[in-house]
Amino acid sequence: MARGFPGGIHPLSHKSATADIPSETCPLPDELVIPLAQHVGSPASVCVLAGQRVTRGQTIGRANGFVSVPVHAPTSGLVTAVEPRPHPCGAQLLAVVLQPDGDDAWGEEYLGQGFHVLTVEAMLERIREAGVVGMGGAAFPTHVKLDPPEGKPIDTVIVNAAECEPWLTADRRTLLEQLEKVLTGVEVLQKILNARHLWIGLEDNQPDTAQRLASRCRQRGIKLAVLPARYPQGAERQLIYAITGRRVPARGLPMDVGVLVQNVGTVAALTDAVTRGRPLIERMVTVAGGCVEKPRNLRTLIGTPVAHLLAYCGLRDAPAKVIMGGPMMGAAQHSLAVPVLRGTSGVLAFRREDLVDGQPGPCVRCGRCVAVCPMHLLPTYIADYARRDELALAERFAARNCIECGSCSYACPARIPLVQSIRYAKGAILARRRRS
Image (tube, rainbow, N blue to C red; front, side, top):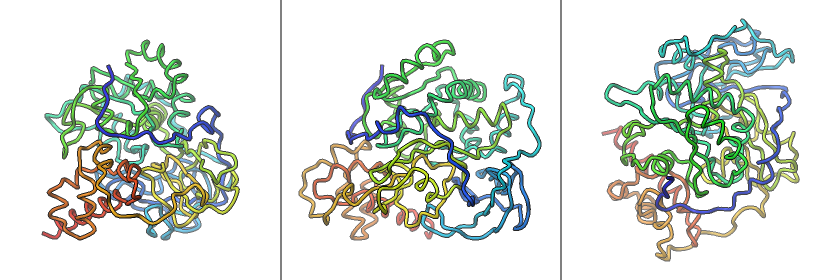
């Protein structure tokens, strides 16, 4: 039986505009910008030159270590530059700039092979070579996550389809439109990890999806957990507790309690990698927000500029804010030239009237941030210490345990940007530790 988790909030979902509309293929842009840094770990090392022609799926950046993955050409065309370009992280990072030729021609065709005859090592290598990373936003290399160390056996696999962020419905459309691929991916995970318990978790605001999944999951020996819609239900720790009752230690990982969680898009991508040898070169992206005329989910090539997606969906006016990801944990962008990455779940464009106005006021000690924190923290204290650079006190109050879900900032009646201050504290504490 599904359990509740402490804290959490109920923001307006804003999902109705895109949830039940079939996805579309985003038209090919004039230029693709493919950063070599799209994952946790070492960025890929470029292996193409300006003036070189490439085919769809060709490796253009080689993995640079174990915690790293290759980067591939999303389509065929001409490499026009290898240079720093605007990146969603806010910096200018090295990228391969590709001018599509419109042929979309693959290189060597992969004939495919049933995964049942492959060894675990062979499957992990295919996942690595395909550049599969966590597509829920973390972008952690999947082959590393599927290779836990000795003494950390995984007995439970959870496919995360909760998608608790407002506005976003990319996972919902992936699950509905690529269901067979997702279910096959669960079987791949079971074989790799020898897991006994298989789950798909989604929120109860998707009754049609749950109904469609129920019989298909039973046929495959997969359990379906329909969870109360509450943010941040899709966070790993909260999802694991809601489904299994196991608590991940504050500084631990899901593997410490025998669980592996994978985003639904990642599971579909690893199926393509293992059964077809197809690299991760496109993903589903929700394009929505009060500024967007025709919100929709787009099957989008990695490297597509945000400006291209917004132009295709139409804008009512110049957006006052554009966020990559969801409104709670996504990142505001200063340039529309930034490209879609493997971890980009959404592009949200908002009008001025959609945003909260006014300057933050003083803390009134109402305790709402404490009540909604899913990690049992005292956000107002940590944020206050962060603003005063009292990092030792911020660390004593467990600033590093914050999952940056933004529930505290959402609940604060004084509009204090609590999560931003806590994020600063976390970074400063880690920087200090590295120096010492």
